[in-house]
Image (cartoon, rainbow, N blue to C red; front, side, top):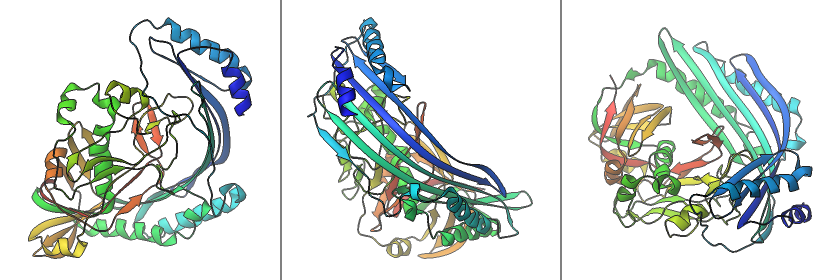
Length: 453
């Protein structure tokens, strides 16, 4: 492949050219209730070209690699038509690498029938209670090989295998409808999704328990959030604000997200780290051929970094971080997160609960939205805290606030970092879903606005 891509690239000339080519094989199984909505295998091949000639980028995607020379000429011709602007790329060293993925059980060696039987067993567990109205189960395994070549001498071949499983139990009693979800998987083999009966049972139990729980009362509380929700908080509420393509287009947020600004206590660290093996956002080189790296966004309470492509790094006179990613060859790479998390502190959950006179412990993530620095998140469940002890379960609540105020209100950070990956992923612009992972420890936050009854 390298020889062919190189021979084609040598036939054209521009300031900069890159070629991405992908081979994809995927299996999908999807249950909704008792109905098998989808099952099957698929394969796809395709590529993309970006060319730069002073004025700006051109982008061409294709499926027929035998016509690559024609597509390269088209991309270069289109780039020369762009008269306005001048794109610069931050310099990076060229590399020649081949990256493979090692798994204990290659999903390709497992028959579709065996995968179907596994999913059917889990789905039967999800539907095993009379109070469960329906279920939603999604299984997928994807093997992708990416080839990358550019006019600066970089060639990278990367293999990636993802295996993921999502299980949701939906319970109903009259007009009261409650759901509980379990997401499992990441970069790895079939072993990630085997033996998950207990997770299916937990989803059923939580959904049933929520039917019996009372709605939460709204107010301002000290809140303890679990690792799943703290990871979502790091990703959705702060991570997107740290993506440099968003920042350089928004002058107001540039002033707010000023490097060196203090956002929290010295115990607060928020990190994006692609090289964590097994997690959904794992990779060694991004879709511009830049080596992935660990990037501190907040370090000891201070804003110290942001996520970059080569273009945004040049615009903002900073260094590339290896965060240019595309969901497929049909799209150009844009600045995206990988594995984004809040680093652990030194408090145990029990210590944090014991310090709360009146508050709420919230767990899981049901949904939410962000609007610049404002957020609203809906936990899956909550527990009242009274005089340092957990009380009754509550439901139908949400957390609302300003991200920067909330960061400064973090009083304690737990010692129990946990990562979460599952079906789906991150959405940005027209590119969704992108595999990522979120993580964090328990957090104790004061003065959180809790919406409820």
